[in-house]
Image (cartoon, rainbow, N blue to C red):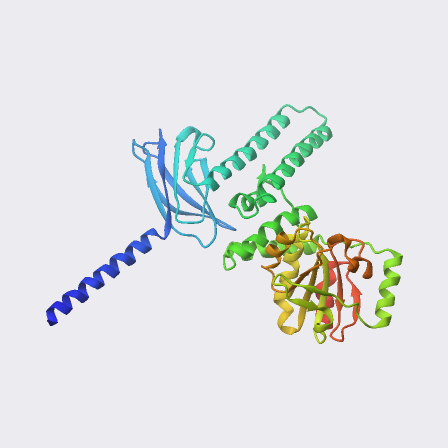
Length: 389
């Protein structure tokens, strides 16, 4: 009886070990394929990190050109490249998928085929478009005459058209895809395509992707890095909202009256929230539209402030004027502060009550429930919050 129990126990342990090995083996992705005309060449697999490129595996090819690499499953989508000499194939992986590549050594950078990953197929189109533009610019330079000013203008026009297409087709349309992240850091002949520290529109591109990564990969290193880059860019390019004399006078009257105009609206679950119930907290009363182009980047800045100051008594009371209630509910459900919506949308009486002329518009409210400031320069928002706290 004892021996039978021992044998049963050993059998169970063997099964568990085998299952564990199978689980570990499957928790990664496979990259395999065939590189023709590369007999005797070394094929490298490089990981494209945030600040460096690292070779993670290699194989010496024989006459068949067949290869297979296996890598652990990344914490978010990651980028890799297959490399022989100066020929490279750019790839992305974010799961336990099997990616197959077929190419010839001499044309592997442009003439390869990739299957098993839609993300890799889209990334190929993006990279080929990048290479095409670079070749066109190089050809323009080679054929140019002494009129360098005209050449520069033509090059800038071509780059601007390309940039607009990339932002609309790869970033804003699918910010959750690896191609969107890759596009943020593209270079044309060594020059960054997007300059988030200089351009408000470019900063919005970074913020759009960062917002999605915050939700999908909250603990990933790439997420933290992109979040910081986007946040700095939004702060660096924050504009000053113009305020008319009429609005300024109205605001001063509100401040003199030392109180707020009550707002009572439902959240996603239908629970009513009243602005005056937040007495004792420093409140950012924010009027916005989630479906607006600025929303993702704008909420990224607010999220950073909320995470930093919520425990000190800071709250955000965000009023949406979205006409699409479903879109608003889906967006608001991911936000940690108070999100309410007026179904009257842009016909809301609150727009008139608070003299809202542009969106977003925000007011800072003290712990005593007094409006102390209408935010004009959002770069100063954090310092004002800190002062009130």
